[in-house]
Length: 377
Image 1 (tube, rainbow, N blue to C red):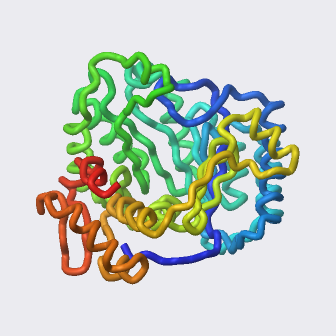
Image 2: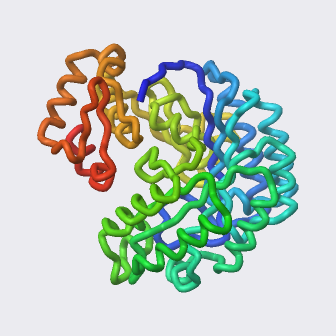
């Protein structure tokens, strides 16, 4: 990957911290939806944006805006109108700005889709996870198969690019079940983008503290996904991401390219010119701090040149393009890049490919990416 240095902020992430209910494995901050609390959140978001406008950071014309969560689609139509008005009054958008919204099937409605379609939204990331009722029930998702298929039908009546999130390594999930979900999804709804995630259990979640039985290591499922999607014309351009016709998620590429991204909302993370930060971790503290017109940043860390270089290499190795030795040497210095390459010396060529000036993971290497990145940290 050819790294581009841009000191302007061209990407924004907004965290909507509400869900219908909390899934037992989810490590992202959210709370049960309340219309009153969502109204207060939007007021706090407006104050946070005002703080950023006063902060002296250069916010340029936006190339990407990603509204995630939580479940952004759970906001009411009135709240969406308010959010859209706030964003239009606060930022400038490039003509081809990628505006993405995460949605869950149970809260996708025709009215909501018309509102998004008539605004700037051009990409919907739908939390499908599975098309099998037994797996959705096992995951304790707040919807069933029919909710998913109905939502897919509604979305396909509009102009949006469709990205579908899928999970694998579920309890007692046979490969034929994974195949059935993928096959049906591709044959009937033809998503432009698919994100696949192995179910992982993190500390602080109910399943992280009390894991369910019969989960496997995910290797076979991931290998099958790689093979099957490549057969169907999808390019694996990132560890978890597959796209048709170059419909990459440009917002995620901004992260992998270590570009500046403001994170707005409780628990959101951001990165600006080597400064990595996170917001107040919960709704209450976020509302209080924004109400006082204070910064909502609760943690920050400035990365020195070597840390930035090592993080940039790890992020780039998430992508199919990897990184350019000459580009990274000119940005971070030859000595640091040489030390990183030395750390990777013992990685077999079947996992890590050196193609003249470029270094990237093979499909096999992507299956063991974590063990390779650990050598760089």
